[in-house]
Every structure is written in structure tokens, then in C-alpha cells.
Figure 1 (spheres, rainbow, N blue to C red):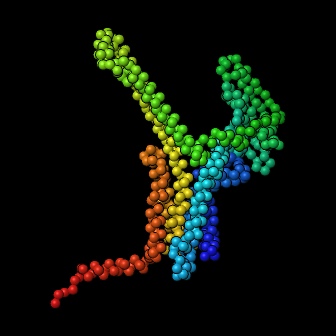
Figure 2 (cartoon, rainbow, N blue to C red):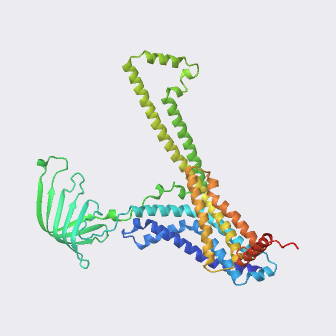
Figure 3 (cartoon, helix red, strand yellow):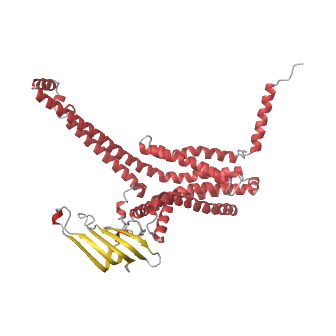
Length: 483
């Protein structure tokens, strides 16, 4: 039996590794397609892109593993059935449960590993991934001057060249606006007939050597009267302008700015964060209610009229009626302004409480996501392995189609329910586990059919059943004549 178990596990490991790498690759390519506009044209080094793709692939592991298990279990059991290897096992008295026993144990091990990865390694990978992605998106485009177009990538300068020799790097008709002093605008203008451009040895500065040029400088700070601003002009045979390129480099943001995000927390941290947010939301709600009570006379709990009788209200009404019309109008205007202010405060308070509730829901959804994706490994195995034993088809054809259908159902249900959880329409545990609850009965039904050797996908079996129904219908539709 140990040799049989080893053979089944070996047959399962190959498709699992291949399908897992393919799924991770597809998810990473989807990520690149989403952020390609933010990453292109910035002169990123290959090791920076490799680091980003590594962190992105690590963040997709918990999602890719259930689909890989579904695909590999379908291919493994389908291949065993297609090669007539399941028949001698069943003939030897082994039930489907005994055959799948090593794969069930191995899948349970993968599910536990997925949960541990999501709880320990995934928060760190998400932290690295999100911080690096933020830095790359904020990075300025690489230095690339196009002839006839102003380049504003270097802070404090706007450069335009009319012609550029790609072989020698010679520039023709160079125009530079120097606006490093923002109060003066384009106070200094430099124009040269030709020049060359090169980086310094450390790459932090751009050395722009200009020849046969002239400059114009409107001296004095901005805001002075035009008559008191001296105008300087001059010519030069050769001049070297040094420009700081540090703004074009990749600046790494402190990761501590991202570590409190719900995607960067483990299960215990998510629970603590959710509890803390609930307490803060309750305190804030009490503060808002106290503010409204104090701003409205009728809701003021400390007012003696609320504790005795309505004599004070009647007296106030008489007092207002006794006031002259201009004074009464001022009181009415004051009351209307207070009512408008309180109405606006109520709207702002409701929006703030909705934001706090949504933040709590995101923490709760992320807490349930980690064990849910681990449980999805087992559910997808309950679907894939028995279904492969029924269809008895291996390879990347029909198993891939069936796996994609089940995964799309799971993904659509989970995505829709997660949005509903964040919107507050359903609790986190019910919404995040809805995809599992939908597919679990399907997996149990397919497992039962496979254990009973039911011809679930046998076309001939359905044809024979249809013929039996037709024969019964014919007998009832055309009864024999009575002699």
C-alpha cells in the first residue's frame, strides 16, 4: 500500500507544480497589465522589476494554490482513469476513499501550509510589494529628451532641443527655462546653438555643455514693480550647466507607513485592530450624539425643563411672542442657521461613521479570507479528484475547462459577497465563506457519485435513460387496442 500511495502522490506532484506556476504566472501578468502605464518609461533596473514580480507572485500564492489543486487533482485522477489504472485498484477491493487517502492527507498538509503562509509570510510580502509599488508609481520618468518637445522631468528646468544626434549625442538649438525660483517664474532663459549632454560619474547630476549661446535674466524677486527689476543679458562661447537628477532616482519610502494596513497584518493583529476600531467608532458615535444633544435645546439632557414639566417651554414661547418683530426675526434666523449647521453636522457624522464601519468590515473580511482560502484547497480537491475519476480524461483539455468553470463560480461569488460585506449588507463570516458554502455541496455530491461508480458524465448512460423514458411515454400515449 505504501508503494501505491507513493505512486499516486508522485503522479499528483508533477501537475501540481506545473499548474501552480502557470496560475501564478497568469496572475502576475494580470498585475503587470494593470500597472503597465505606471511602470513604463521610468528606466527601472532589471533587479528592481524582479524584486517587484517576486513580491507580487508571493502575494498571489494563497489564491493560486486552490486553483492549482483543482487542476492537478482533475488531471491526476483523470489520467489514472484514462490509462486504466483505476480499474485494477477498484477490482482489488479499494474504494475511492482508500485510493484518495494519500492525496487527501497531502492536500490537508498544503491547506495548513497555505494558512501558515497567509498568516506569517503573506503580510511581510504584501508590505514589501505595496511599498515598492508605491515608490515605482511615484518615480519620475527616465531622462529622455525628444526633439521639438519640452522636457520637464528635471525639477526646476524646462528643456527643448530641436535636433539630437543619437550617435554622438550632439544637441542643436537648445532652449532652457530656469524656474528654480518659483517666485520669479521663468526668470532666466538660456539659448545655445549647440551642446552636449552627459551624466556625472555617480549618475546624480546631468552635465549640459552649451556652446555659442546667450542668456536673459530678469533680476529681482517676483512681486516687485516692473521698473525696479533689472534686466541682464549676455553671450557665452561655452558654458556648463549642472542639473540635479536625484529626483529621477528611486526613493524608497519608509515601510512603517504601510504596516498598519489590513493586508499587512496577521490573524491576531487583525483581530486586535478590528476590536480597536470598533471601540474607537463607539467612542466617536457617543461624542457625536453628545454634540447634537448640547447643540439642540430640546435634546439637552441637563436642562431642568426635561426633568420637571413644560412650563419653561411655555414661558419661552410667550417671551418670544413678546419680543418686537426685528428681534423675533433675528431669533428665527439664528434658529434656522443652527438647524442648518446641525443638519450638515449629521451628514458629516454619518459619512464618518460609514467610513469607520467600512474599515472595520475590511479588517473582518481579511481575517476570514486567510482560513477561507486554506479551506478552499480541500473543497476544490473534493471537486477535482472525484470528477477526474468520473470523466477519466487527463491532460490539459477538458480538465482545464471544468476547473476554470468551478473557479470562476467561486471567484465571482466570493468577490460579490466581499463587496457586500464591505458595504455592510452581510456579516463578514457569512459573506467571505459563501463561495465555500456554495461549492461544498457540489464537491460532496460529486464525491458520492464517484464512490458509487455513477455514470455522471457518461453520454451513453443518459441516452439509455432517455430511451427508457421515451418507451414509457409511447406505451401511455398509444395503449394496445382491446379485442
